[in-house]
Amino acid sequence: MTQHTSPRVSIVYASAQGSTREIAEFLAANLTARGATVEVADADHAPDLSRFDTVVIGSAVHNMALLPEIEEYVRSHRDELNARTVWLFSVGLGPALRGPIGRRLGRVVPRKIAAVRDSLAAHEYRSFAGHYERAGVSLPARTLFRLMGGTRYGDLRDWHAITAWSDSIAASLRLPEPQAIPTHP
View 1 (cartoon, rainbow, N blue to C red):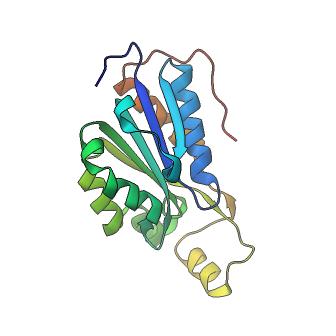
View 2: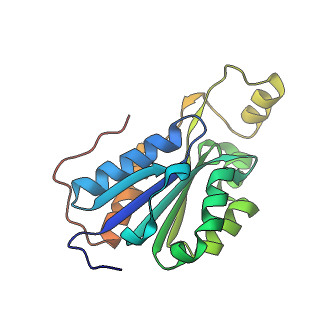
């Protein structure tokens, strides 16, 4: 890899309803404000990794797995990814669950996600809550959500946790404090 004056970061994501994309864009804004060169793209339009030192990969979670686009991206770029520092995040319901059952379930990394994480030797993996709208969700699914500790619908993202994770990526890259404070959606 060519040496650069600032870290070059690729953020690759797969989003089902936009939450993951918005988190990816927020991470990019935070790292850019600190002097990193960042490119954000969905998995289908991801850039050539030879230009990047670090890769952040994010995906929505469906059926306890990352979206197929991200699984395919990781499979087809495994060697390139393993030659870089990789950070992995997912967006789903788990982190938003409360109560004794929900908290326990929210801490478990689903087997399929753990397999992707481990295949990348990811520097760190984080799970964030996303959006969960009541409209269009069946009564049995809404009941299960409540039983598992879901307390509300709507935007469930914890922007303080997302910011803290972004700050830890920046610290790992030895980036200075941001020149401007990025805002989340």
